[in-house]
Structure formats: structure tokens, C-alpha cells
Length: 167
Image 1 (cartoon, rainbow, N blue to C red):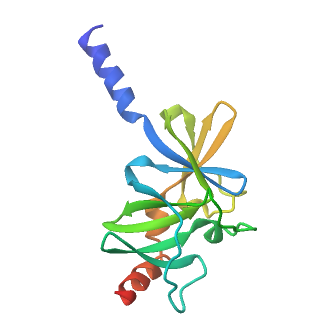
Image 2 (image 1 turned 90 degrees about the vertical axis):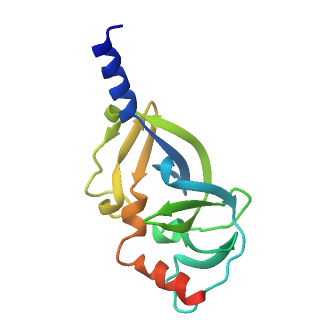
């Protein structure tokens, strides 16, 4: 292989992105794997007075107070139940740690740029502002969530005040 071709192959590989795939109800969502710090089982949290419903409360994670956001409530899903598959994905966004509650985590997928389509402007339970696109892989369609935009949005600023008021 010539050096020019080798460079093109490396550039193409660099554009591939890995996503953590999780489920919310019947839908599969994915977030950039580089944002994920860890995955934990769901544990009871300390409720915060006057917090929005989707902010379940805070938990102490090795000395760090972490706000816990239930994406199922945030995305207006029905039948939000806590069971054996319910997990918390701990993410690091904008220099803060936040836990997001999801129904379950299935796998890590690598998507090439041509497998990622632009987000639609309608027809999903989530504002398209928080979508980075749709991942298409064989018979699966993944809703790609821009976790940075979601967790730094104006209403999520409450997460900051919730976490700091508890400390």
C-alpha cells in the first residue's frame, strides 16, 4: 500500500465513531462512548425539593455529588419502571459528572460517517436540538443523542443548582 493510500485509510478510520447503545422504552438511543465514565446499577437517590420530575435527585459517587437525570421521564415515556435492567450511565459533560437513568445498555457500536444520517425535524419524542443524527446499521435504527447539548441546555442548568444546593 502506498503512503498516500495508507493516510487515506487512517483518515477514514479516524472518522468512525463509537457509541454506547441504550434503550428507552421500545427505542434504541446512543451516545458518544468518549462521554461515558462508567455504567452502574440503579440505586436509590436523595430527592431534592422543587426539582423537576426528571431529576431524580443526587447520589454520592466516591465523594462526588452526582445529579441523576431519568431520561425516560425527560423524554416523556410511559411506564417508567425500575427493574433489574435499569442502569445509570455516568457521563462527563462540560467538566461535570451526571448520571442518566436508562432502561438498559445493550452494546458499543462503531458507526462510519455514511451510517450517520441527519436528524429529522419531527417525529421523535425528543427535541431535534439534542439529536446529532440517526445511526443506521442493517436492520437497526439508533437515535444519536448529543449528550453535551442535552445536559447543558437551559432547563438542565437546574442540575447544577440542584447538585450544588445539596452539598
